[in-house]
Each structure stands twice: as structure tokens, then as C-alpha cells.
Image (tube, rainbow, N blue to C red; front, side):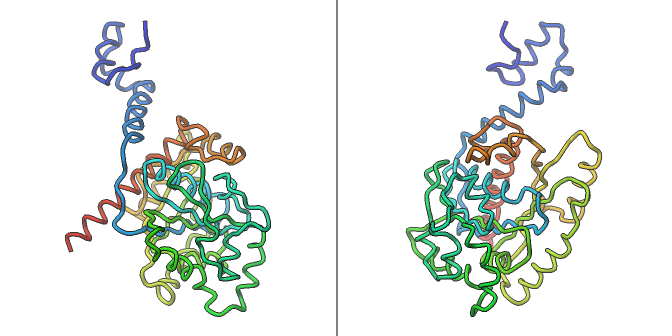
Length: 322
């Protein structure tokens, strides 16, 4: 006999389990049933064409605390959106080049990169390269040259606005019509992150569901407030994403509750679970969306990206009502 959940909707599953001596209530509350329901929901999401925002959403993914899933979040949200037909560009602003690695983009020394854009004034278009994940996904890689950019930028005129000017010129070109532009920052609050905050319209903050999760967050929020006051009045914290969630621990639930209490509706409903597939994927030059699309990590990022896209739809609706 085939598995009760195979090829059936929840009602059919429930009816067949009754014939096996399993009550409908028991099946609907079982772990297998919950997994089956989640699989059906994810399958439906994967088949959708997600809504496009009215204008390009420029989102900086920032948190000066390392190891919170910042780069992982940037590349997997970008991949999920692109796989649903949206036009997405990832700008790698971290000298380690982890976003470039995860997207399997060459970032060896000498490759046109964000360094050339920031320090040499090269047009952003010269550094944009396609990503194999999807036809509508591109990346501007970061090379090791960027490691010295903080010091080199310190003596430059309008040093905080270098990336903003490059992005504005790029987005003004009709051929570069993008839906989303993600900027992946280094784990610090130096000039590179400052450039990213000045260039963006939104900030997405990944927060891990672990001890000391909120450590240093006050400094990040203070920096964002400073940028809002003096350098970029349109900047807003639009999204907070909970990462590395381990449902087996009370601590994870407590951290999630604290973050939701503090940030309210800014927090994405979907949680990104701690999942080994997410960690393995960059080693194969892939995002988890392509490395193991059925893993819990991929499903978490897929749902988070879908919610991000739906929030863009809601913003469009509210703008239209004004």
C-alpha cells in the first residue's frame, strides 16, 4: 500500500488513515501530517509567480555581529526571489567575498568588483556578472582588494556616498530594471557598511536565536539613526529575520519572543532553522535553494522570501491608496 500522504490532499489522507485504525485527529496532529501539509504549501509557493514591487527595493543586509547568517540570508533570499521570476542583483561588499562564493561567481584578484566601483569610480554595470542559479539573478563580486578599502576611502571626497552614486547611476538606466537589490555588508560598522546604509532604502537585520543575540544591536541601531538623521533620510528598518532557530531549546523560543516583542511587525513570520544543509551549500558554490531545495533551511528561506515579496505587494497597495 502506498504511503497515506502520497499524492493526496489532507482530507484524503485523513480518510485513508481511518481505514488503518488511525483517527483523523491523531493523523492531523502527527509529525508526518505536519510535514506533509508543509510540503504541500511549499510546493504551491514554488509554482507561483511572485509580485513585483513598484520600484526597485534596495535592501542592505547588516549586522556587525559575525556569524548571524547575514551573507547566507542575502544570497538565499536573492536566489528564492529570482527563481520566481523577479530581477535581483546582489552587491557583495564584504572583503571575504562569501556572497560571491555562494553564488559561484569568480572573485579572484583582478576581477572587476565593488572595489573598482568604490575606489576607481568604475560604473557598476562593468562589474555586474550573471549568476547560474536563475536567468534573472546577477552579482557584483567582492575581491580581497576590498580589504584595504576602509583605509583608502577615509581620505576620499564624499566617502560615504560612493556606493550610492554608483547605484543611482546604474538604476537610472532603463536596461537595469531590477526588482530587488541586496547589499551584503561586512561584519563591522566601518565605511563599507556606512556606504551600504547610505545607498539603501531599507535595512534587513538578521538576528540569530542564540545567547547574546541582541549583543551589539544597540550600536547598529544607533548607527542607522545617525545615517537617517544626516546622510539618508529615506532609510528605514523594514525587516528583521530570525535565523539559526533550534526548536529543541527554550532559549531559541525566548530569543524569538524578545525580538518579536521589541521589533513587532518588522519581524518576518518565518523562522530560519539551524540546518546543516545551509552551512554546506557555499562549499559547493551554491545557495541552499539549489543545493537541497527540500531541506528545512531552504524551505525556511523560501517562505521568508515569499513573505518579503508579499510585503512589497502590500507597500504598493498602500502607496496607491495615498
